[in-house]
Image: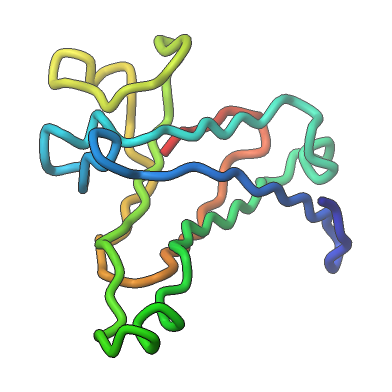
Length: 139
């Protein structure tokens, strides 16, 4: 979708996915993190209107879990959510196809841009600013 903000274009999109069973790999400090789904964010040159002026691109990310309050009320149980967090990495041109979290030998091809804490909360949000010259990260 698109909207207008003070002095900048606002674009948004929503991607649906799930972390379940084998794909629920956990936080990035455990080896199974490689199993988590990866969503690629790419900023192509000239794609953002403020990029034409050499400006940075401000990105807001939110990962949400289904609202558990109604189910908890109906069952009498306490509201509970899975631990969730966000990690955004930048590929340095080596990744094609699905991006995996780098092993130590691959670390030169990736750099972390942002890591949130992993909490038992419904929503996890983070903001970062990417340079206006293009580039991208996946997380």
